[in-house]
Length: 187
Image 1 (tube, rainbow, N blue to C red):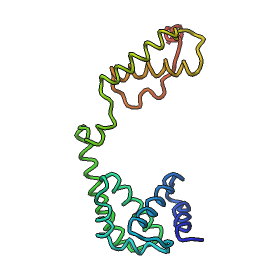
Image 2: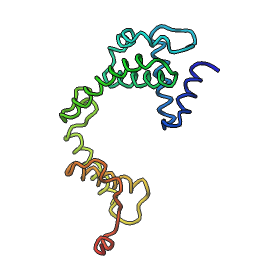
Image 3: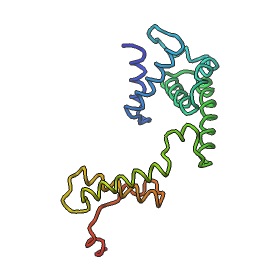
Image 4: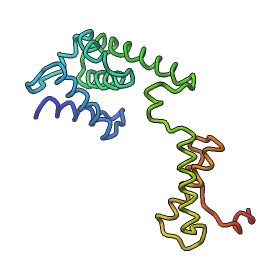
């Protein structure tokens, strides 16, 4: 069995930590990527290469701080399960905590970062999508009882997007039920 398989087993077997399969896979992937970024081509035998904290942080310095934080979490957890010295783990935790603080500070302002802005649609774009959905719904006469699941999904999305543009909820609509007017009147 290879070291990386042993590490994966250690990550999965910790009873006091409930890590999803996806999380374990991400930790292993990050450790493997980092090992290769350092120019290592041979099979990983241990995590001793992580003892040079400055070298590791220098190599990751070009990454966005949230990506760097994910790498640091992978390093910290891997070092913990492999029972490396607490001083080394605390050094990585300290660096990670600085990035956590930066993340909290940036998100507390409510201001969208340049990177986030690339992924956001403008209100004009959202309104155009709503208009197109409405036109499709009206042209297909979808406000009736006998519609397909795909058509129902379109109507639901139209309703949800309309509500969210008027009332910016978060996860408040997740449990929303579609009921008939008669049921509403009986409430």
